[in-house]
Amino acid sequence: MPDKPLTIATYAAGASLAAITLVYVFGPTFFLDDDSANSARKKGVVGLSNPANDCFINSVLQALAGLPNLRVYLIRETHRRALDGTDVYKVPENAKDAEEFKKDVSAVKLDGLQQGIVTHALKEVLDRLNERPIYRKTISAQSFVNALERAFLSRISRQQQDAQEFLQIVAERVCEEYHAGQKVRRRVRRQQAAQSRVDDPEKENADLRKELLKQKIGPAADADEDSDADDPDDEEGFPFEGKLESQIECLTCHFKPKPSVSSFVTLTLNVPHQSSTSLNQCFDGMLKIEHIDDFKCEYCRLQHAVEVKEKELEKADKDEARERLESDVVKLRKAMEEDPEKPPADVELPESSAAPKRRIARHMRISTFPKVLAVHLSRSLFTAGNYASKAESIAKSVKRRPKRRDNRWWRISDDKVKESKTSDVLGMQKEVYMLFYELARPGEEES
Image (cartoon, rainbow, N blue to C red; front, side, top):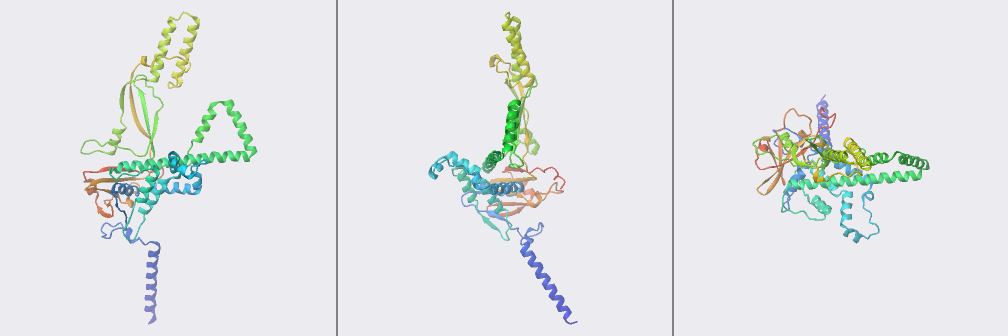
């Protein structure tokens, strides 16, 4: 009996030691990750040093570090390039020596795009910013800045501090690197397919039969093949990239030509000059309907040409002229029904200056939204010669449809970290908004 309390104490001490060991090994930051608002302990955080007036760079990087879907893209893209090998993305020197190749600026820039210099550098710095150290840690963004300067073959000026412009440069560059790598991968797939046809005679004969059939069918088969060649397969693309669609409509004949599509990685919204506004109002200001006068409508121009030809037909007295005019009218009417933007090449149209001028309505819409997952807001403000990044708590921002707004924000200015409330963030008067949108994917809204 006397040994029983000693045995119990020994077991208790051993269990406590084992629990401490498990926490230390598998979760060293467990106690630092406590979201309790009453906790006085500061979280371990990674800050960015400011050795050369880099606060506007630091602000953008701190904001980007809080975007989970961007980090997933960077991991996927760098992993894909690593599996393919660096030789696949390297621009061939074409019998040039190393010195001549370095002097070829276009080749060097293309090589940087295909190699994904900025993509790799951005992944590295965001990974370091997302570390969970036991103590406060400060890193430098100089390696990322060096990668940007190497990619553009020029130095980044610290005199003009514009965080929004810097964000746009980084986003556009990473997007261009993605498309450059995508083209390389498509070219490699085509080369591999051609090589497999050479190695497989039966497949080569099948391709020959397909080519003969294509010649019989006409250009439609070529269009199908081109569309397949441009198919992005299962690649999700750069998450910041979206597409704007501009559509015009003639208010006289209501003809709508094919919309023009342009891509974007950032959107600059004009904030109304009023005391309060909403995000929808800012978008409405950019996507509002615009009316333009004195526009030459393609459909109305063909209609005008038909009317001119019919008047000439009434006055024509020779059979040859009448047949030509009747043929022109038939061709013009056919073009009006099928595609007014492609008038018949063998029909002479009246002068463009004689075509009627119309009033049109032009409107824009976002046809392809960026592939992102939640809503993140960063404010980059300039106060006393220093930018600061305000980012919402990451653990709360990634939740779908939160029941209540988290009231904790972290003010990150160089190596200083300070907790603030939402009211403090909204109460500031001199800010530059940088909005990062992360839309919920299908099937994830209720998760």
